[in-house]
Length: 336
Image 1 (cartoon, helix red, strand yellow):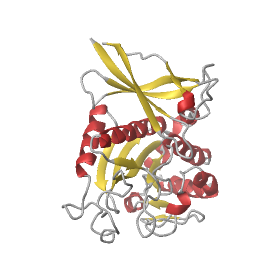
Image 2 (cartoon, helix red, strand yellow):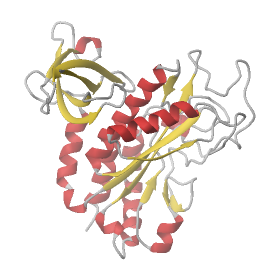
Image 3 (cartoon, one colour):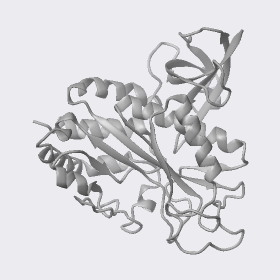
Image 4 (cartoon, one colour):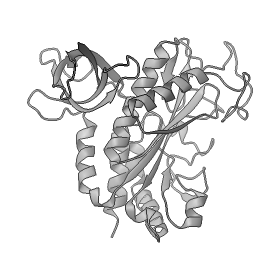
């Protein structure tokens, strides 16, 4: 009996990479999945005269779409000489995870996304004009407030069946906009699982004729953008007396604010305007319970004097390998 292994990878599309996948038929009982080639000239990862690229499996998950013993195989892209492809951001993230392993960094990433009709309008928007202003949609219920719940629910079930570390979902501030959260997980684990969760979301939305957008500002004007708020802690932050480490982490992130903003996703300046629960992209601040700050310290953390911080700047279209690596390196390298 054969099984189907869906090999998933991140392409070289610019300015924002997208997901690709193809199916390999394997023998039943296969646990070690082989490397596999693909045409990099069709994914902006090679030229036609040297088109071969290599998929190197890094993690497998049960396939909740096909069911049975079928699997999803997350891969990193390599060159034919065995070196990481320039688009392979996982390789560098893995080195950072190893370097700061003793600090036991943990992440929780909140992925916001927008469901679009094929004509580009978000679900819940009329064909002409706009819906009622923002207000009733966030965590709302009922036909007037909510669209797309079936997709969000099926996606949640699929992630859980695949073993993705989903911790929740909710409807977001703009109509047609939802969020799912992955974590707490380590650096590589949270990024791996976020990419797989994104793939599952796109795949499930196919069946509904819906397009998934993780663009930072899918609708211009007085509408919330789509972020990927990144919650982060180290072992030191989570232990008694950890609040001083949290404040030190905020200050370290502030010192490298420009570097982070430059790597937090395309269109960050359109989303981080100082409105819609954001700090401006060219300013930095942190504060307790402040959703208008670059970094929010949750109120319960300030009470407990330990816990985590929330970096509110990453876009929905960010690369989690890049963001998790930068946050870990910036905060942990500053720890005494």
